[in-house]
Amino acid sequence: MAILSFQTTTHFDHGAINMLPKVLKTMGMKHPMICTDKGIVAAGLMDKVREAVGNEFEITVFDGTPENPTEAATRDALAIYKEAGCDGIIALGGGSAMDLAKGVGILDTHGGPISAQAPLAGGKIGEIMPLIAVPTTSGTGSEVSSGSVIITDEGQKIVFVSNTIIPKVAICDPDLTIGLPKHLTAATGMDAVTHCIEAFLTPQINPPAEGVALDGLYRAVKQGYLKRAVKDGTDTEARWHMMMASTEGALAFTKGLGAVHAMAHAAGRLHDLRLHHGTLNAVILPVVLRWSEGTNDEKYARLRNAMGLAESTDLADFIEDLNGELGIPKNLGEMGVTADLIPGMVEHALGDVCHFGALKKPDADGYANLYELAMTK
Image (tube, rainbow, N blue to C red; front, side, top):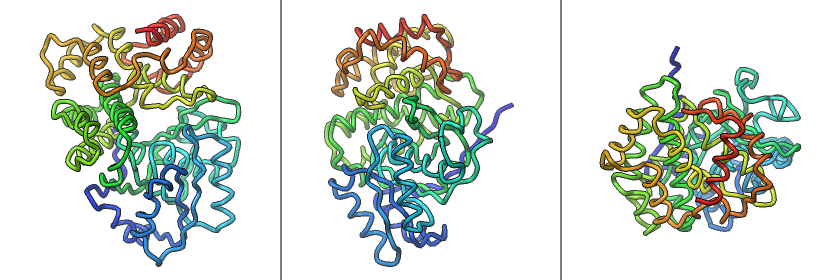
């Protein structure tokens, strides 16, 4: 049976941040906590939000979101939330800030440890406090997704999935992405592209989500807005379309993801390397596309069509070339991943929630081989 769910009210356009006071009133928030990170504060984006909010609301700020959200950081944020007497959260930033905010909600509702709310058990997670998502990157699409990725105290990177943690409202203002550095524009953009491709390929039945995914690829790749945004970060038209492609990628992966994300999550949990999720997806994507080729030729053809590619185009080769044009690392080896880490990553990937949605599911040997290829290609 197909289940079709799109639940977030999204205010989308240049200047949409000015809707924030109205949204706060509608949601009954008088004292929200902003979950963000120090980079967002330093970039002046916090000031833009404060200016939009005005003096009508009391604001508490948690700016300790790490690059890969941790259970410890969610506890710290929740303590501040409770001490200040907040009544909702504004998640301001990329996927990390939004994932952390969702994690705060899970801890607030259920207590710890957060790992007790296991993946694939969305029905276990109850309603969380009111949550507004304000993305400042175009990649994760977490502002409309049911997922939150948290590194537990035990070092496991777990995907929590539940409709109860989907933000009720998202404010998508492409102007907040202007000034994002080229390498982050490229990495987050390829994150959106990966979401669209992998969500489209997963066998779950959801034709509307597939249509959304193909539209995201049309914008990012065929219309060339990803390259334009990387080349000129002040290109407001490109920023608009890339934020739309990002949101569409997450709307699409309501039907699931696959082996690329299982592998990226397993590598992203390596604390010492501090690997960027979007960059991992970009590097791993062509390896998995090449390995899965022949599993569903019709879907591969539709992907080529959406991206404006010739029928004879090798998708994996195309993505590798695109990564090169955008300045993405060539392989995991360049990112510091070594062969001794493969067994641990394989074990984690096999248990990752995304593994179960793969177009073609690797076994342990398959994942080990894919990691080896991704390290040296």
